[in-house]
Length: 114
Image 1 (spheres, one colour):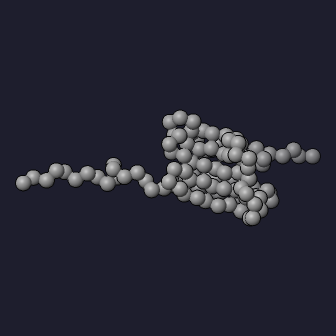
Image 2 (image 1 turned 90 degrees about the horizontal axis):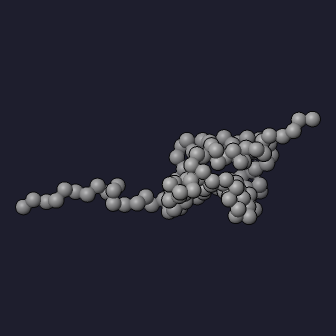
Image 3 (image 1 turned 45 degrees about the vertical axis):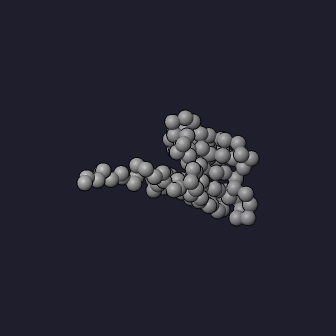
């Protein structure tokens, strides 16, 4: 009696949650650190859910997030894997490259010099 070959688990099961990898977190936290140093941002939260990973940025701890950086793998081939969403739910920037998407937040770092 011959048994059929085993089916690899990775091919049959979808990941239970979406997460930011080390390089993505490095890019986000670099920007976050610069904005904290300027006094613009004060706190953050990270959520790893089934379909989306979210990095929420807060001006004050008890408030709603002023920005959300989202990673949605289902949109990889359509609108782009990453998005920056404002406080009102408006998508500020969406794209395939995290660095390009974060650029919309880096514009706040550029200030006029008197």
